[in-house]
Image (cartoon, rainbow, N blue to C red):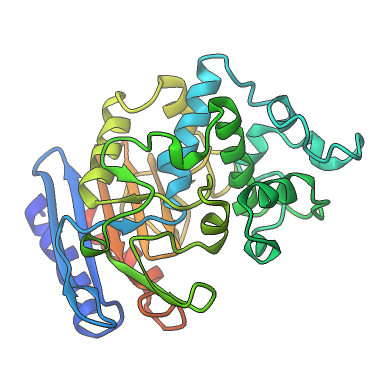
Length: 332
């Protein structure tokens, strides 16, 4: 199949999902050595309280894609330049972590543990329910006696990494440059709506969906906004080596377990990128319905951005199946 034929087949799948009412809308984008950059928009950027059409320039709340587009490259680049030691405890920067218990297990967590989701911290926690002051909530995360468990994919790992970046820059994440084509919020007229939030009592459009990132007023695990074009440009930078240091890119591609690399996922049976990409592919998805995948073997990257949580997360969007089908169609 040609690149155009593969894109047409993937587009048919996304259109079926939208036409069937499983997701309000989507943008599909591909970066391919054969065809260049191709994007297509489907359906609605917002359904309620009024309808707006999706466009290829629509901004999306990227949710956990923030981890790999913003936080991971910056931590790895800092390590490449000698600013950080990945094998040193997080206390090399966050000296006050669990400061009232010098023997606390949390004080032994390393940056490498956080990047590879092997720290033993819980998957997530409703930090936003513990107050409204972002500085107090940061102190809460840093000082809490978190239970130690089996390694799991954890937002808390990336909250700590975000705090490290803030400490190094002496600034909040929202004050740091997110990179070309990315932002920490978006114009509601140009953004895909996410969910009606009972906590904030309104439909979220152009403001971060993740409650903890909202309460912290910026975090390392979620909160970045971007377009299909900006994600494909980011992917292109990793493919051609211009987007991060060689050491950082190598670690992003290095398997550290059956599913993970540094920050990213690699291929495994049933993963989100499908079964037809090469074994040199990495990818990551976000809760709001976003995702990016980069195949270093073929030189191809693709992004599928949806507003699958609009107007509520409590629906059967079939996003997991759609991601796999699209990945298979694009890599046949």
